[in-house]
Image 1 (tube, rainbow, N blue to C red):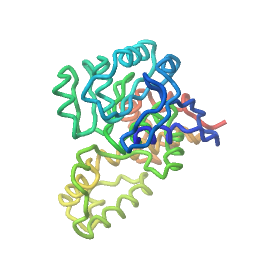
Image 2 (image 1 turned 90 degrees about the horizontal axis):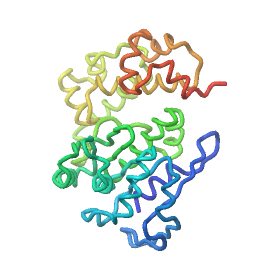
Image 3 (image 1 turned 180 degrees about the vertical axis):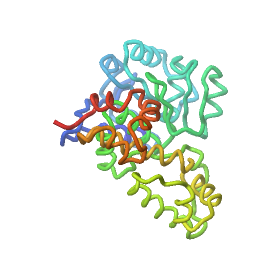
Image 4 (image 1 turned 90 degrees about the vertical axis):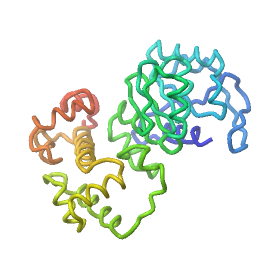
Length: 302
């Protein structure tokens, strides 16, 4: 039920200049489907609905240890073969693996079942710590609430950061979470007031991306030694200060490319890269295209 709720909320028809998604739930046996919380869900569409879908997301189901019916596997492979983007949330990855769509690819699933996926499908490189893994035409996501991370990534990839951020705001969600599943394996209970200091420093960094922001300065503002700050930062966010800042700078660059007519050189300085030449390489690694090409695809300015 959680998986169905996540995708239906993200791909809801909102209007207000946002994409008008044609969303549908499908099953090999249309009708009443019993969910994990005991509530019945009426699914009107059969597998034929997948034949026209641009995006197919395999949701988690209780019987994932048994491969889906052959008709389901055939429908998934047919959708992928004709060019649809195929994704999986949580243990939905087992369906893609059974269909052979993860062979030779990297993938993730709920951390609790990552070992089982790797054991059942040794041809798949399982990354148990990732929130999602994008392999081009096949994307897999981690479990439970990480379905939001998966869906927002798909929106960011296909429609740009502005659309993803707008829908994330509507759902009262962060548009992008840094780090991976590892940070959620134990309950993150603050040990002392340093967590509040860290939160304040991160908020300050977001407002000062135009500055160099060396780790030493961030640590000083948090009233910590550089080593303690780096350790605390990684424990709290699941990533390093450098990787967090790089992702933040690139996300802001994407938004400015989409929503303003500022020259790329000026955008690069505004987000802390110093010049367009310095921005170009990390931007291409993240998006696959240089900033100017990204602007041509996703610009929202008249």
